[in-house]
Structures are given as C-alpha cells and as structure tokens.
Image 1 (tube, rainbow, N blue to C red):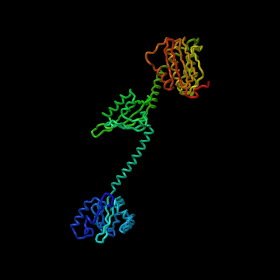
Image 2: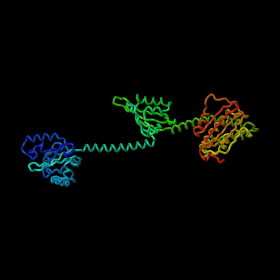
Image 3: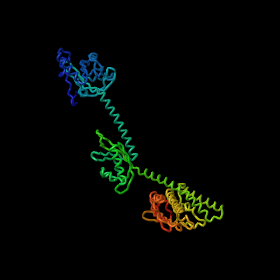
Image 4: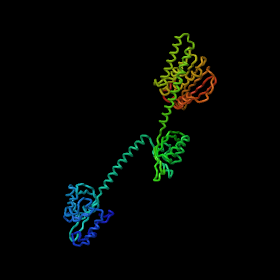
Length: 490
C-alpha cells in the first residue's frame, strides 16, 4: 500500500518470486507465493501491461465472486462498474507513464467502487503499485472490501442523527417544562445538575452544587419523606417520585417535584441516580385553592339553612300579618340571592359599600337601626370584590348564627377608611358587633376563621385581626389597593 498508510507496500517481486509472476518454471517459488497469497486477507489482483489479469488470489475470489480460473486473462475493468471503465483505462495509462499527479493519487490507498460477478456495486479501498520484471510491466492492486464498514458507518450516522433529534426534542421538552436535569453519583457522593436545576435550588452560577447543600435546602418538614423515597428506590425499587419544598438563602420557598430512576452495576448495586426536577408551586397553589373552595362550598351549604332560618326569624319580628311577613321574607331572600350572585363573580366590579349592603341587607330590621355603615366610596376590581365578598359573607353569616344579628337587640357597625403610606394606598375596615350573646374565644379553629384569614392574607396580601371581646366580635382588616382603579380620587 501507499506510503504513510501504516501498512507496507505489497512487493510482488519479494514475496511471490520473479518467475511466478511471469509464469516461470520454478514450482518451489510458486508454491511459496501461493501459500502467502492464501494467507492475505485482502484481495490481490495483478495485471500485465495491457490490463489482463495474471493473478487473482483467494481473498479476491471471495470479494468479487469469481473463481480464479474464470477471471484470469480477462481485463481488470470487468471488476469495475461500466461507467468507470473508460476512466480507469486512462488513469492506468497515466500511472504507467509516470504522471506524478496520477501516481500520487493511485499509489495511495483510496476508496473506489467495485463490481461483483452478480453485478452488485460495493465500496473498496485499493492501493495500486507498479513493478517492472525483466522488462515486463506488472500492475498489482491490493483490495479491501469495506462494505460492512461503510454499512456500519451509515448505521452509526443514522443513529447519531436520531440521537441528535432526540436530544433536541428532549431539550425543548425540558425547556418548555422548565425542568432541571441531575445525576447523583452514589459511589463518590457527587451531584451534577444543569442551570435549570441550579435555578430551582436558588443557586447562582458561581455557587457549587453538592449533595449536602441540596438536602440542606429542602424544607425540614419535607426532608424525612424525601429521604425515605430515595432510600426505598436505592434499596428496592428502580424509579422514584416525590414532591417537596425547597428554600433559598432569603427564606423563600417553592414546591419542587422530582422524578428519576436508579442505575445499577453488574452486581446489582445502586451506582447512580438520574432524574429531573421541576417547579410545581403554581399547581400546588391551585390545588390548595380548589381544596379550599371545595371546603368553603361544603361549609356554605351547611350555613345556608342556618342563614335561611335566621332570615325567616328576622322577618317574623314586627310583622303584623301574614302578608307583611311574606313580603319581608321575600325581600330578604332576594337580597341573599343577590349577595350569592356577587360572590360567584357575577359582576366585573363593585364598591365596598355595594358589597356591605348586599351582604347585610337580609339582616336589617324594619327600621334599619341594627346595621351602621360609615366610610368613603371605594371601587373594587373583580378579584378584590370577590374576595372581600367572601369575607363579608362569612362575617355576616356568623353574626346571624351566633353573634349580634342573632338577637333583636344586636347591632353591627362597619367603618372603613383609606390610608396613604410609603407602602401605597391601603383600605382599613373595622367590623364591630355589640348587643348580641356574650362572646368567648373558640376552643378550636373553625373553617370560617381559616377562610377569612386565607382569603385576606394570601389572595389579597392583606392583614387581619380577630378579637373575641365579651361584648361582641371585633374584626380589623387592612388591604393594599394595588390597582389605580381601586384608588378613589380624594
């Protein structure tokens, strides 16, 4: 083969013998040369100056499908596809004429197409050498069938394209799902993660990610459960899944879900955990809202009968006739329906006074003296109006069931005001009950209190204080008015 290819040139004169190459009469040399040719894995084909085949070894027979007896004496072009034969003849002539360019190309290993006896074309690597023996020119080509290698290379190329496409799809899926990938080497206790994972853990690009820090950032209440899930996966199962809270250096927390699998060694030992993590805080918040809404709906259904009973009782007071009682009852039940319509988001916007009137109208006595309202006009957007409506409805219902509005002598006073501070404009409201049954602090935290505090602090980012004074309930709340349309012109 050509120089610099890692394989020495096949020197026919050295290995086969001069007389064997030209059909001489030295059987010992011929036998020795035949044995050597039989051992060579590459095909060896030699031709005379006119291109007729003189030598065709066993490997060449296997490569091209010809027997030596049927190919000897044929021109070497029979081993090439028809479209290349004329070009090959001219290249060989240039090679024999010592064309430096042609010799440089054909004298080194290069890939060409061959043609088998059955007409199949296939790739080969060929190295051409020229020898002059006793004035006779002999051309010898060493041929290696690279069909299988090319097939494997094509398969590898196809596989690489598929892997690249899969990697691209995976990357898009991870980016779209805001997922972070990670790998935990259990043998060395080393954790490797991408930028998305670092973001989930509240780490900067400069901060190092390690196992101890990762566990340290898991919320203490969730850490034992997470360790149980991981220990169980390492000891018994292959896959694992869990959700837990993480905390950054500022103390902010978020819910994170982790999914992964355990990779084991040959002896079945757990070697590596690989997986993905992603932020599920929004989903958790929605789940909590749905749970709270379902519980609130159940609570309201239970309260509805008590509310209706209270309205019926209030309507009967001071009614001089059945018709008067009927009229009062219908009016108050209609007010209840309007209030429920508002709290279901039936209106896009309202004012605080509208809310109070709708919630408390069913409980007004004949003279309207049991309810006192005082404060400026404060417009509320749909979200704030709905949340405030829920709170006022809860306060009014409880007052009718257990508080001041459950007795004819009771009153509810509601006062509100606007306060400007360096934190913006705030609405302050005070709900004060008096004249009702004696009040004592509850022995357990009921759903009503949970609803009020959750709605005001989480949904509206406000504040609330509830005092159970003996003379009556006192509820103070403060709400930030973030939207310009919620701030009245003073």
